[in-house]
Amino acid sequence: MTAARWQWSLVAIRSFVGIVYFSNGLAKLFDFSNFSLGPWSQYLINRGGAYSIIAANVHNGGIGPLRDFATGFVLPHWNALGWVLTGGELAVGLGLMLGILGR
Image (cartoon, rainbow, N blue to C red; front, side, top):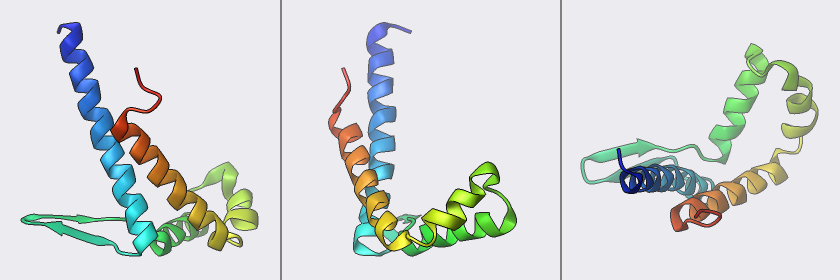
């Protein structure tokens, strides 16, 4: 495969991952979880869903060594950390889509 093909495939992967991050950030910002565009339908994780996933992982022991951090810091401060997560997903998604910090 030539260098140009590698570059375009990496651009496509970076753009796709950016769209995924950005759309999940929008779902958290506007508090929706289902998105449909014509025949395509997608489930997105909003802030309540993210909290439920973390709480279920803590309850089922799926977090491992970070369990104390999740139970002692993340879950009790979720109101603020949920917005930090939202901003991070929007920023990372936008950065990936626009090629910020890329070549």
